[in-house]
Every structure is written in structure tokens, then in C-alpha cells.
Length: 194
Image 1 (tube, rainbow, N blue to C red):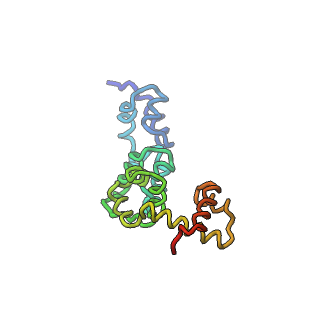
Image 2 (image 1 turned 90 degrees about the horizontal axis):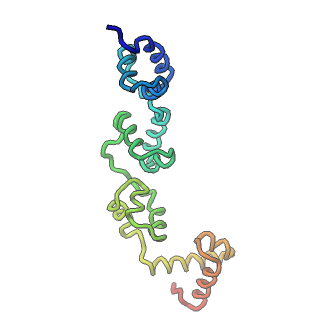
Image 3 (image 1 turned 135 degrees about the vertical axis):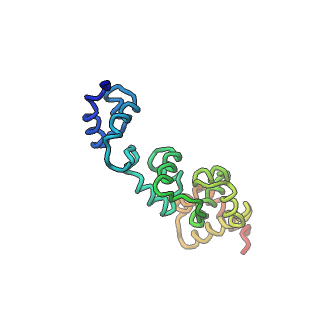
């Protein structure tokens, strides 16, 4: 019995070797993906190679992950879901195997985000970890509000005494210049105790 698409299998094989996926070939010829696969899979003599549109990124993603980028950071950078990145990273020789990640380099960033009102959950989600990890790293490293306020006053005084302009200080601290002037008045009124 003659198969229905026997006459197309060589064309499909050529497209496959040119880098087209089963899905793409099936769309071009208006047949199901499984039909294309069933016809050309027996003709393929090479070991399996990933023919996904993400193939060019796998080695880049792997190196970024090994440099310390989280799966969420990589997925945002390449505008794909974290699930896709995780799938391809775990598929490439299981580079993610319950390793303990070190987030020491993020403590300064996390402190600032926390001071700006981000929740532990939001920070954790952004950096691909859980809120208990963020809490553990910030435990004792995030000062109370009064300590933050005092440190900010000390910083304003130090910068102003060094001749840094108020507008520059305001920009760096993400405050208005009038807020910096008020802080300077507090310092002059003796609210800053050394």
C-alpha cells in the first residue's frame, strides 16, 4: 500500500536539514506535525539535535546562569518565560542540580528595594529565589527606619560638607532638593547626634 505523502518526504527532509522544525514544515504543507515526523524520522541518521527557535540561546543562557544570573533574570532579558529557560537549562546536561546559590552580591540592591517598600516576596520573585532566602540575607543587614533616617542625615551632612551641590545629593538619594534642605536644617538644629 502506497503512503499518502511518500512523494513529499524528501522535500520535508531537506527542509528539516535546513533547520526547519516539524511544526514549521507541517504548517507549510498543511499536514499534522506527527505526519511530518513519521515520514522523516526514519530517514534521519544523525543524533538528536535541538531544533527549537531557542537553540542559539542555550549556550548563552547556560553561561549567564553559571555567571550567577537567575533563571528569572535570563528570561526577562530574552523576553521568554522562566519555564522555557529552565527547561533548556536542565536539558543541557543538568546544570541546575540543587546547588546552593550565593546572593551576597545582591544584599545592597535588596536593601535599597526593601527601603523603597518592596515586599520580600516581590524581591524574591524578581531574583528567582524565595522570600525566606531574601529574609535570611537581609536579617540584621536592613536597618530600622530610624537608623536609615540617621544614616541619611549623616550622608547628607558629609556630602554637603565636601562641597557637593544639593541638587546632586537630591538626585542620588532620589529626594527633592527641598527635602535635602530640610535635612540640612535638621542637622543645623542639632538633630544629628554624633
